[in-house]
Structure formats: structure tokens, C-alpha cells
Length: 105
Length: 405
Ligand code: SF4
Ligand code: SF4
Image (cartoon, rainbow over all chains, first blue to last red; front, side, top):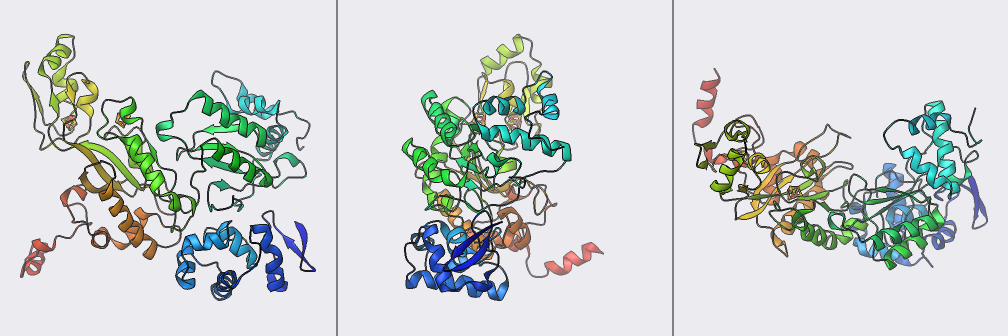
């Protein structure tokens, strides 16, 4: 397992760059991951998506299905990809500090 | 015990015997590619230890797309560093797999430059499969592919790359232009193909006639199979010719008709088309004498899949006959309604066939606004799918109970 430094903290990450333990995740960490997923800077809209994913994960223990994400954030799929060019599963979930999604988003 | 020496005694055994082996091809690629060499090593190790050495489920991709690349990592990267990453890329094949040699060379060049050089032509969905590359190479490969006029195919919970039989390009039985429909669907569903948002995968397969050379009835969530509405075209002179040349028309043609709806009196062939099941048997046996009818279109079937969550399913009839002409509005409307209800109500990893089984065909038909028809019933009185409300009038229920007693 590789270790990387994000916003001054050390994180174990898997091969795909998902952080393994999100206890130390915070907004600065998210902002540090963002550029690796093609997000130059985190705007308010980015945070709406990331926060929704985090809240959902905290409540249900899984990432939301993509339809759910679109409905709840009132953004269509095109918009999500504009914000997160590598897609909701790879981009948004990684920035949100979730473990690698399996089959959801 | 592990094999980093380059010796592969177990794999070598697959190289012997009369049939070509994938081992031979990997060895050939290994002469040029260190990745393919380590692939051999890791495979030999797997054969020794009887255990696979690929980890499951990486998430990698290219910007703008949520599908098309399947991440794969070795769990013994210290032993075989060149296959530490071994991602698969799916490349959308042309309709009916027609290539110019130039296009094929181009694909091979791109893959030799950036990947293992190993290809699988083609995967079961139909895509060109590029086997083995590393994360950093994904974007350059994608850029060169698009430059060459190719695109990635589908993967994950999305519309998978549509595929079709060779159809009218080479086959006289085609009841509609399978190549055109396949291309049209591919272009129309670009978003759905590249950006997974379904409960699970959705496959289209287009076959020009009931011979179903793409096995759509067993492998597609939506099988679009060419058929005809009117009668089989008969050339009695040509039937006679077959008979004169020694074909036993009675036994081999009429006798094998599953509907037993053919008669041959030695000079005239008669077919009761109201009973014909459009199975193609007679046409296949006497291609010069019989042809599909003139009023052609396709039968839309839904729901087949391989056994993963539930058992295997074959597609069953949804629309017995639909004209198949551009711009295919009727078909697209139907697909849209199906996707809407399935996406809304489907569970994660539930194929549309399983979804229909769960909610019941009656409810599904109501949601997509299709009238139930007897064609949907596999065997008369044997299939609980369809509930004909108009058959139940007041008092019926009591009568039903009486019969039961
Ligand atoms: S499915 Fe029918 S039309 Fe298509 S290639 Fe086969 S025989 Fe020809
Ligand atoms: S197509 Fe099949 S069912 Fe129809 S007449 Fe020929 S053999 Fe019989």
C-alpha cells in the first residue's frame, strides 16, 4: 500500500488513489485530491456534490446510486461530469474521501 | 517455487497439440513486450498454485467517461512488476466488425506502443479488447484512438456497446438493416454508453433474421430480431429442383417444421403462414426456393442474460412486430420508457429481465404502455405473466373456484 501526503497529512491509499481511512479527511484534504481528478479548484457546486456523498455514506455505509445523487443535488449527469470529469465514482467519491465504491455510483 | 526465471513448463504443455493456444500468442508478444513476459510468468505461477493473481475491481478511466476501462492489478507486483497494472480497455467495434486492414494496423500500432500488444478480437459484448496497460497510458491511448476515429465502448452499469449480425452487408436473409440500426443506437445512446447511471448493464443486439447469428436471444437485454409479417415467399420451380436433385422435401423440410404447417405434394409447396413460427428452418434448407416474406421488420424481445445474480434467462417477446426504419422513433420511445421505469424502480445490480420477473410483466407493461399480447406467452395457459382483465367479468371468480373444486 502506498502512502501519500495531502494537505500536510499522511494517508494510505490503494492503487487507484482512494484513501483508506477517512478519519483525517477534511476540506483541505479534498482540495488537495481535487487536481488529481481534473478538478482545478473546488467551487460551491463541487462541495454540494461532495457533501451529499459524504452525508449519504455516513448514513447508509455505501455511496449513493448515481440517480439518487442527481436527484438530490438537482444536477444532471452532464453537470456532474462537467464538475468531475473523471465521473462521480472515481472523481467525486475519491475527493469525498470514500473507500473505493463497488458497483454503486 | 515462484517463476521469475522465464521458464513456463505448465504453460508449455498448452502449446502442444493440434489446436492454437493463447499461450503461443502471449509468447509471441513476450518477445517484444516485457508486460507480456511477466503475464506469462504470473500465469504460470497461477497454474502452479491453482489460484488467480489478479485483484478485483480497480477504478480507472479517462476524463469525461465513466466506463470503457476496467482496472486490473496484480497481487504479486513484486515478482512481476511489469503487470503491476494490467488494465483492460474496451474499444467500440464497427457495426458487424468490418475493418479496413489500415484500421486494424492502426489499432495494433497504438496498442503495441502503449500496452502489452495483446488483443482479444472480440469480447462477448463485441468490443475490441485491449489487454494490459498502465494508468498513466490511458489518456494517451484514448487520444490516439479518437484521432484514429475509434471510441471506447461501455463497461459497468451502462448501455454496453451495441452489436449486430452482418445483416444486409452480406446476408440475403436480413429483414432490416442491422448495421444501420446498430450504428444509430450507438450514436443515440452515447451518454448512456459512456456515463454509467443504470442499475446494471444494458445490452442491445441486432439480428437480421431469426437465425440470430449474434445469439441476441441469449445475450442481450434487448434482442432486436428481424422477422416478417406476411407469408414466406415460395418459388415452386426451385423447390422442384431441390427435389429432383435428391432432397427429401417431405422428410427434411416439412417433417422438421416445428409448426407442422408445410405441405408438399410433389409439385406445389403450401405453407400455412398463420401457424408458421418464423424459425427459418425451411428457408435455411432450401435457400433458393424459399425467402422471408416481403413485409419485414423486427421482433423486440427483452430480458436475456447470463446467470449472475439470478439464473440464466432467454429474452421473451415484448413487441411481436415493429417496422425497423430510420430514425427508429418507435423503438427509441419504447427503450426510453423501459429505462425510465427500470432506473426508477430497479435495484442495484438488477438486470431488466430480473426486474420484470420481480415486478411482474403485467406491471411492467403498464408502466411502458404496451398492450399485453398472446405472443408474450411462452406456452398457452402455462405462463402466469399476463392477466387479461377483459376475460374476467362479473361472476367469473366464483366460476373459477367451482372449477377448482
Ligand atoms: S442473423 Fe439472419 S440476417 Fe443476420 S447474418 Fe444471420 S442469417 Fe443473416
Ligand atoms: S419458418 Fe419454420 S415454422 Fe415456418 S414454415 Fe418454415 S420450418 Fe415451418
